[in-house]
Length: 472
Image (cartoon, rainbow, N blue to C red; front, side, top):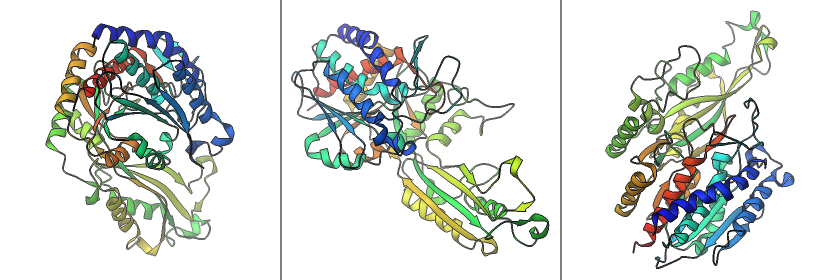
């Protein structure tokens, strides 16, 4: 494969074809179903699918089939099936991305907005540019670059879903529906990730799982005057504090649920140390901290392990607490807290959930009523060991494309698709990467895509496709 042709093809596609179309995609308010219950009526998810489908249809990939698949009552899925080229093996490469977006939220910078694409200083601003609208374009561009440069690739199937930001609830049904059609998947490429800087390729090797419960502590049928009830009726807030102390050390943040802890593999620990050395300050510097706030540790390796391989608790919502201006002298009848746990990649989410339930509902102080609702749990993901051919190809990409060695990252978030695919294709290799950096503002105002980095990631994927095609 002619390397210079790969580079020129990718860069030309990004400059002349992808950026204009991706900019138009940013303007589509394709909000994920969890945040838009009337998504089907609004039609924006379908509009995003149709826009990308139309662009892919113009690429004239020989034999490619572009199809919208939609099962009854589920969000649509775009499937692009590209036949193998050259002397490739008979396997399937699955390239994944998603077209649904997080809500717009307020507070965008001057001249910026969620549905207003803006090109500025090599960045494309707008909701869904980085997370994850670019992924389908990058996948197609990588395939085109391989062909233009005389390389080969196995059969490639691009899957672009529209429910990832809602936890991919429809994906298991689609994987089952398409299982016979997909055949033997031996490589999965996911472009819904990123890393700690824009200087190298970052490979995501693990993702944390989660447990989420909404806890309501109830003591009264209705509020009472605090001057008459306090000291007689126990405070629901105080009882909630006692229960929280059972599951988290308030002084250190350590989660006190044994079922949520695992032994960190030695090779993952080594990877974390290499990553911290490669991008010092990447975890703490982008944090929009206030005043003299300090990190939970002065050791960046410890911060990385906290984020990727240790359980954490975040209280992400509350109810039963009036706004300060509305707060009267009332002993409130209940306190509701949303408890969101992030779990190590190899922890059992179901076992962790049962342990949390027991700690929150057993021997409750004063016999108060504790209700658990809106329960959600999901296992994390730990990548299989890299095959020698994939590691060697990433080394080549690091040298020739990025000018820096690739490194790994253990992400604190979740990509449900990875666990589903690992279970379905346990022997497959996984390339989970992307163009998102620590300041790309995914999910928050001023989201942006680093265009040059996205092009480099695309070029690296092309090298991987060509190398994979030669494996027996």
